Image 1 (cartoon, helix red, strand yellow):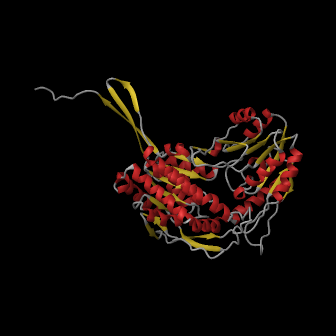
Image 2 (tube, one colour; image 1 turned 90 degrees about the horizontal axis):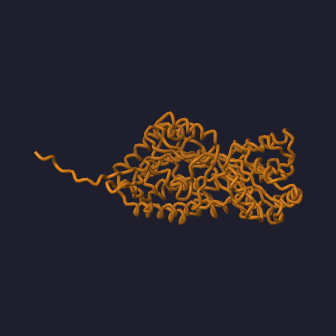
Image 3 (cartoon, one colour; image 1 turned 135 degrees about the vertical axis):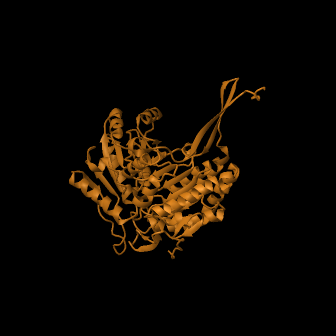
Length: 494
């Protein structure tokens, strides 16, 4: 690949590129070779304060708060158009910074980011209140108003896409934004800032503050003038954000957190078909996604046949250079994540699970980069660490089951509840099991069906609130009830 042109690496506040108050920098690395890409301005509490002031002023005193919903929608759609126009450059940056295959960056991440913003741009002038019948003496109406200044904190696994998931409904609702991209993958968010200016967004509507979670994320969570925070990331950090929100101004919180998704394969399936389908979704994004199908429950009648075919299919996956169009799995995002995944693999072996395939570092080129072989574990019990905790890497466990009641109970035996999969020819069985699974998304005869029109979010410790669809917009709105008495007020007669 040719050298990728990097974006401006300062903070983006009030439509201007500014240096942080501290003058500090953070480093972002190329996970393919472990080399430094560049240094990025590192924001702090003072920078968050400046961004929040800019966002508040834009909301209450600037043109954004006075703009019609139709014009607001046009701006959002223009930003979507610009993302599509710059899709090649954005895709190159995403792959450089994150390590995912370029085919995925172009064909999914950046393309879907544009679609997401266009979808929510279309919603901007369709947010409506109601008329509530009370009696002939009153008229009562509701207004749906922007909740205010919102903080958006996104993870490193789908950097620009996750930002669009939150930016779209926030802007459609009329909010202003202070966003923090992950310190591991800030580059596409920074490039987006140039497109925000080009699209014509007024100053202060969208502000980007790079930095670490325990500094910038903490400042946003505790800030007394942030009206809402939306976070995608780990359950551990989600707890900290909830605590900070409670201790500050009781700001509402939307959390999309971890997962340990069950994928149930019933005995009536075509084993070859299901195994081939699994090859295409099981290690998407190196399984660095919260809804990864990490627990395969396979009917014992077909378990051995499925394991044999599935293993051969996984062996076909190519691990390597993310800029090679034949690559399926690039590197993990960072050395920290690389070491974490390898630690889970060793934990599985030490607890008695059988490493059926993979389980080692993948040696790419000169040995640099953060690559791990696709890994399959068998002889796993439900109480093993690799069966309970989110690994966020290319590791899957296969577990046999006998009955429907058994597999439903085992699938639900987790602290998480983000997603689940069901594979069967029996529609009645699929609906019955879908109703019993404690998951925010249930996919039948497919997996990872993430569409802008479909709400996405979790049960239990996978969080609450929803990204995507019209449901996402609701969390960025405040409902005001106005009730009018049908009386004529006369001046008191003297």
